[in-house]
Amino acid sequence: MPTDQTKRKEVWGRWVAALCARDLRRAEEVAEEMCDQDYVVHNPKLPEYGRGPAAAKAFAHYVITHYVDIHLTLEDFFGEGDKTAARSTVRFTVAATGQKVWYPVLNMMRWVGDKLVERWDLSGPPEEQA
Image (cartoon, rainbow, N blue to C red; front, side):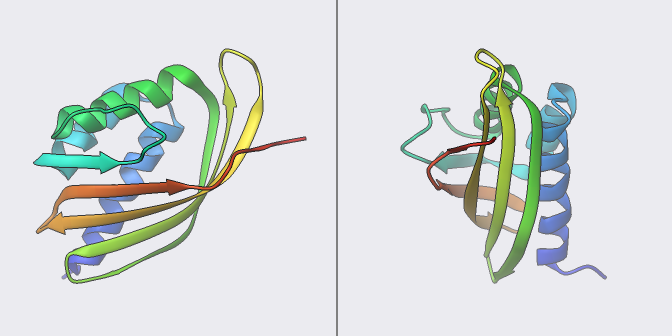
C-alpha cells in the first residue's frame, strides 16, 4: 500500500507533467483532485490567485499562457507527516519575448490527508539560457 508521501509525489508529478505539456484541461483536473478548498500558494513574486482549486487553476492558466517549451527536473521530493518538499530546476521560454530562462525552485507543501492546503513557492533568480 502506498504511503501518503508516495501518493503525494505521484499527484505532484501529474500536476507538473500537465504544466510542462501545457495541458490546461489536465492541469485543471489535477488541481481539483489535489487541492483542498482552502489551498493557497505563498510567493511574493506571483499575483494573488485566491484559494482552493481555482487558485491552482489560475496559476496553471498563467504558466500555460506565458511560457512555452517548459521543462521541470525534479531533483528531490521528500517529506514527513503532513509536509513535503520538492526541489526542482525549471527551464522555459517566455512566449512574448522568446527569452530562454531557467531557475531553481523549492516548493514546500502542507497537506491534510491527500489534499494540498498550502504551498510555499521559493525560486532563485532567473538565469538566461545561452
